[in-house]
Image (spheres, rainbow, N blue to C red):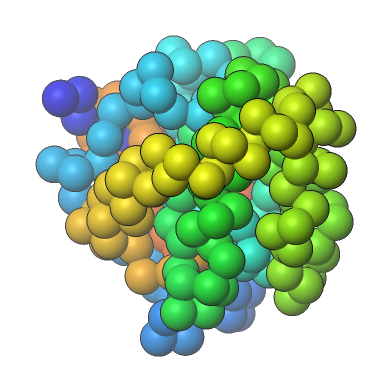
Length: 227
């Protein structure tokens, strides 16, 4: 297994630029947020089964464990889209999306994740990312995605409602989503979005927070300048 990492001091400096923001966001079971030391033994390398936006061999890989009904995940999704517009085109940053459904807070979260996985199977990687965009855009803030709209949204990204319904009903992705959840917990995740910034060769750094664009940009620039 590949071992990922970045200079921890660099990330600490970037993440703590605005401590009130860092410690005050995130959808967590115990309402706490903190910088966390990710466990390299359970931070899985990027696999073909992952949903990745950008170059898999990018200098920086940001693994996001997310809950589709989490309002802070919706905020961070916008941040990461901005980051990818700036750094994804150059191959410097890649974004990996994994599921971390907090069902005690969001009872439909597993269903949302299953629908997204089915869209990926039926429509491919672009359809998966476009489907996420639509889910977040149509249920902003604390609003929750209505499962009855899966088919409507899927058709917008080129996937038939009938095929999606059959896939979701099969429950074929339940184990994958459970494994993703368990891996997030084992890696130190306590809330969403739970993010792990990785660069090959050092220990990964993780944080549960929806950092705004400017803070994420600062962290990325510090990492790139250190290489």
